[in-house]
Length: 237
Image (cartoon, rainbow, N blue to C red; front, side):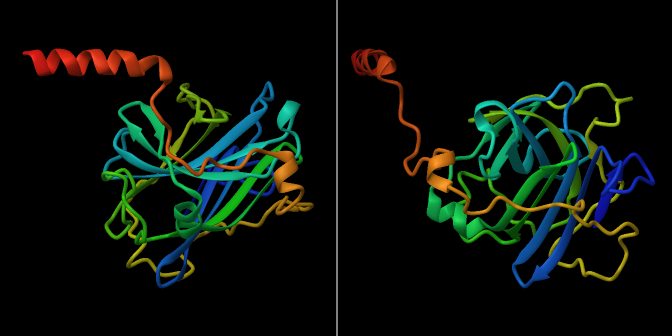
């Protein structure tokens, strides 16, 4: 399954955004994404694929790749996260390292000639906790969306909102089921990384970027007295 914008573009040359999804194993699918770098440039940019039950943003399971190419983040490795579109906002889902390495593998990404490229392998049927339904099993028909925009260390920012822009998110016209889909050559444009693509994998990993946290976020210390106060009122009444 693949889709690119603008229609008829070459993903190695002039596509502003694109995504391909290939089934490569019994419980694996390979995701490849490309996006033009944002102008003016940003320190972190994401390109994401979302799986949705309809063509509108909201209540979607998202896999996002974040790449850094300037400022304090130069040389950092690409990262892949799972998140969830709650209405028109996006919330990243916390995974510890074991969960992350179970859900995702074979991550590679780079910025080459003003083009963001990223690929990874993801489980179709998750073998980790679904985080209260925020991580989906991809075993039913979904519409597929792709988007790009600026990112921050802990979240992604809004994508392009101008529908006439070539960087506006794209949505498939038909549903796609990763369980029943086969690589039968139906993709009309095959995706290759741009010439010179060299993933930055295991390159000064510890020195160049902080690792993902291995503990879930905790309540702020400033909120603890407030929480205790509220609980005491509940006990009184």
